[in-house]
Image (cartoon, rainbow, N blue to C red; front, side, top):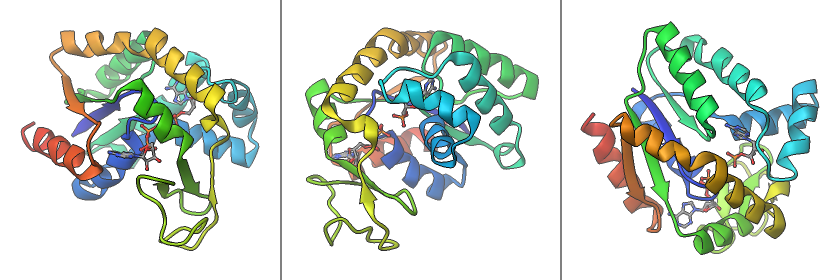
Length: 215
Ligand code: ADP
Ligand code: AMP
C-alpha cells in the first residue's frame, strides 16, 4: 500500500498518519519531520532547510526530492509507505512518478484532508509536540493530562517555531499557490480521495480506514 497523505498545514495529516502506520504497518515518511530532525542535528541540509522553514517557504525541490528518493529505496518501504507532506509541488509529484517507475511501483491513493482556513490557523496556533517522542497535542482540542508534559513519556511539550501566526499565514498561502494544483494532478490520475477533516479525529480516521480497506 503506497499512500500519499495530502492537505494544508494543520489539516491533521500527522495525527492520522499515527493511526495509519500502526494499523497498516507502513513507515510514515514526513518530509517536515525529516527536515526538523536535520535542523535539530545541525546537519548542512538542516541548516539550509531552516532558512526556508522559518519563513514558511518550501525547501527547494532538489533538496527535498533527493531525501525522499533515498528514503523510498530503504528496506522498510518495500512493502508500502505513507508519504506525509510530500509531494508539495508539481515538480516533486513528477519526480515521485519517476522514482516509482524506477522501483516498479505505483501510488495507490492520494488522500486529501480538507479543512477551512480559519480552523487551520486555530489548529496550528494551538499545536504543541513532545520534544522527546514527537507526540502531537493541541492545547484546546486534545490537551495533555498535565500541562506542558507528554502523557506518553513525560517529555517537555514545545511549540514549533513555524506555528506562529505570521508564518502560519505564509504557509497557507504557499499551500494555495504551490501545492493545491496537485489536487487536480492526482484527480486526473483517478487517485484523489477527499476526506472532510473538520470533524473529530476518530471520524476522520474511520473514513480514511474505509478508503484504505477498499483499495
Ligand atoms: P498536519 O500534520 O496536517 O500539519 P497535525 O496532525 O499536526 O496536522 O494537526 C495540527 C493540530 O491540530 C495538532 O495540534 C492536532 O492535535 C490538531 N488536530 C488534528 N486533527 C484534529 C481534529 N480532527 N480535530 C481537532 N484538532 C485536530
Ligand atoms: P510540515 O511539517 O509538513 O508542516 O512541514 C514544515 C516545513 O518543512 C514546511 O513549511 C517546509 O518549509 C518544509 N517542507 C516539508 N515538506 C516539504 C516539501 N515536500 N517540499 C518543500 N518543503 C517542505
